[in-house]
Length: 116
Image (tube, rainbow, N blue to C red; front, top):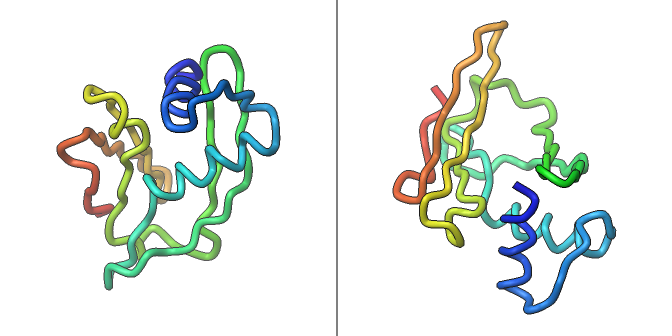
């Protein structure tokens, strides 16, 4: 939710944020990169390319891409966005492999899960 992201950033930096401002987007990007990542089977972090984000009054949608990385190469996903700020935060990642979609749910006590 947009208001949750704005509240998090205001709490961290003690100022108001405009997520449509490129400088403020860069701050959010840095936070997301500290809270969300993919691990290869050997536990090495896989590179993610920041594609961008969309913001409206209700939600912030972040687009990242693991270029040339098939799902089979991903060993685990770590998703702790907002969980450090909101104790009851629930995050969902949908994985689509060959048309079969499966969802992983992440909470503060379980921020990392196997991708397979």
